Length: 188
Ligand code: GDP
Image 1 (cartoon, rainbow, N blue to C red):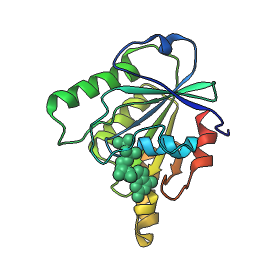
Image 2: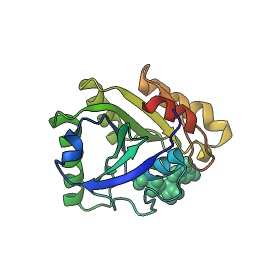
Image 3: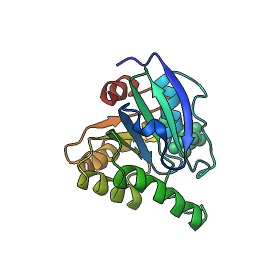
């Protein structure tokens, strides 16, 4: 799929009419700072559609983007950053879990973004287990592959492939523009 149209709709902190207008929804999930905003910008070819940041935990809302007027891409707030105050972490987890597990939206696909250089964290493993348990249609993005030392590449990727247990894994780099077509094709 080529992305020809992308528009930021709005950020939501709970239920919203966009979620029940019948448009299929693709959720982008991952820990804080994993590079989700950069993925949205590289996928859509727009430099600043999503706000990237070096400061984890800034986004506490679900940001909704309309893609090709066919589906919504929902950027869920990043989880698991230790330096974020506990109340904010809990608020983010509550919002994510409500959206993913406690509501009956037309949730079509779950894209879990992992940092391929850091490797899966405890929170990532837990999130993946929950997504599997709820039988989501899961795609895993092994992000920031440009950061991996060439000699470590195969080993780092294999860790994610093992964890994925048959789910599709897409090696990705927003910086080096790797994996864009592959991920676009998997989204819709
Ligand atoms: P978010 O919190 O998940 O939305 O993450 P951002 O997209 O804001 O990115 C967090 C940090 O990681 C920023 O400093 C980005 O420049 C950096 N980053 C994102 N994607 C990549 C990538 O593919 N390669 C490298 N080397 N850095 C990246």
